[in-house]
Length: 195
Image (cartoon, rainbow, N blue to C red; front, side, top):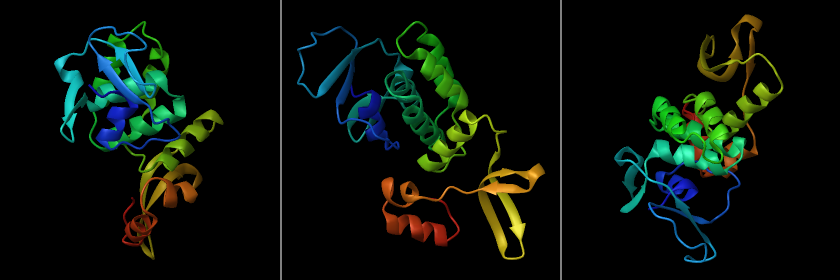
């Protein structure tokens, strides 16, 4: 069954700077040479809640996919995937339970950190990376997606520190070009929505 970043692609999750390898999870060990050079086979037993389907293919469920990706990718790559999964309706508690069940497996420390810090409020990979940057800099963490009313209408801020009357918006090349068609992003932004 398709898993890891292959399942993430099928789920439609945002991926950032990941390779094009095909990842498969099997319930039995296989020879490292049993597949083509672009295929990575993983051995793991999967429970019924770990299994899903998408585009007519058997894939790991959304929450299991997040945990598996976090076990093989960097913190930033994984956080983008986890945030988007939560935005699409993923269950954060279930992600944390899956990470707990995989204690002792390679990469599980990263998976636990990701599932604890992921946010359903991030509306783009750029916002995820901005939040990560603020945390790494040791700054006080802002509120996300803060609604404000002004004389020019209602607006929603990416990040805000209300007590400081300070806001931070993420706008950059990555927002307009890397994850959705540029015209779609601009159109939705002009309508007052976020892509």
